[in-house]
Image (cartoon, rainbow, N blue to C red; front, side):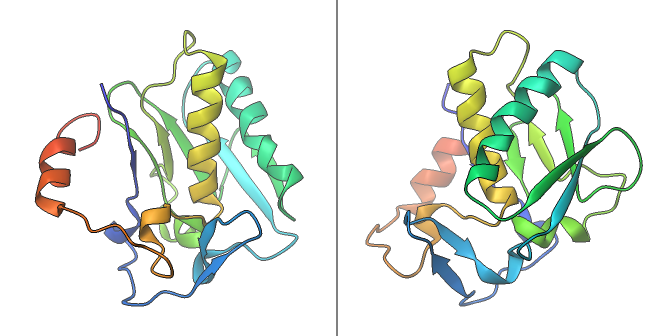
Length: 167
């Protein structure tokens, strides 16, 4: 089964017609108005999940810390910037960058819908690094208006990816 990321930002933050985009040295496209300030400490809390799965997710997510001027603070209770929900079958997604700050504290801002204790390290790392990239403000390459030669058959894309786990 194909599994894709769901970018749900538009539910709370309507996309601007021409959002400011920056490509970094690695060619990653980032929405500048949703980027965390340099030196920020991002408070992250899990809503649920086993301790061993949480540790694996933390370890994968912290791969980003070698490449960004940010700190992750993992907390177990209280107000947080990012709230991670682990539930089977509901897709994996993340709000883009600081857009997560507009989400009520009782709602998740990131979800991992197909990670479990049995998930291989390769798959877990792939999914976690991808979603944390969105949390840092990075967007999919096809969303980059700067250099997007792809002509999409939107009706076919929507037909193909409609339904679980992609919604």
